[in-house]
Length: 132
Image (cartoon, rainbow, N blue to C red):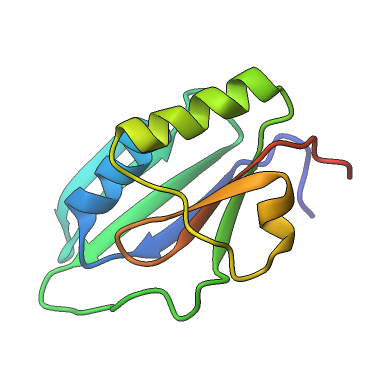
């Protein structure tokens, strides 16, 4: 059973570790929480905000190719209900060189902006509160 103090890690392989880290750090403002090199053939970086109940891990396996996102509807969604903070997040992404893309599901374009990382996975910055 998952308890309220459970931490969520989303782990994903990539062929472009440095580029993906740049997207999430410079674009989204995440921090590097930890990293490792040559752990049984894997290199990786954990990103997030210190103290948050979630973080992302990106790994690359030497000599192994993982390819791009299987669809344009593979999303990470961040709910930013305060307009000024949402707008600042959009401006940060653009300043880092990442322009919004049209979402495959038009729902996300109603109150949000979608950005595509170097692997083709998408991040939605949604100007709404999580309701559930």
